[in-house]
Length: 128
Figure 1 (tube, helix red, strand yellow):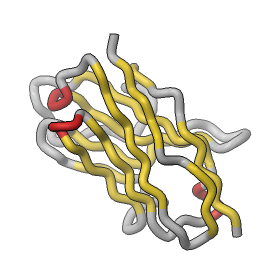
Figure 2: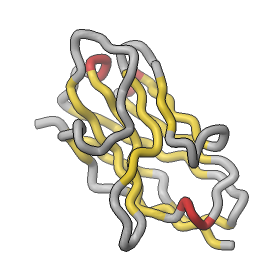
Figure 3: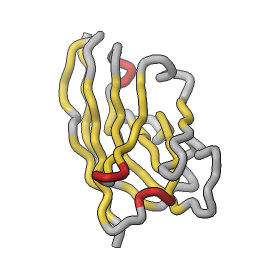
Figure 4: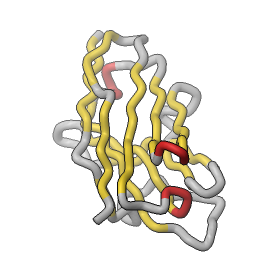
């Protein structure tokens, strides 16, 4: 059974940075759309950034473009999200998610619906 385990969340002041990690197990890492999603209290879960692990094409929500960077390390089966210039609106539970995507594709949606493998989440809190 595929497992995703997130880490790296925490509390920071506005303007600060965090890097989230998601380690996958029991997975052919290079054949998935993987992404980061977040859910704030009282709000729906939304896509933040996605990547095709077989080719590296990325996709970002407008709200994080220029501030967040998604990346991968296939040798470590790990997905990352570097978050810079954080603001209080970024406060949420952040989830790593994946969906099998083979043959290769050049676009991975930031919509929640296609993703069927989820981690347990890691909390990010940004204070002003």
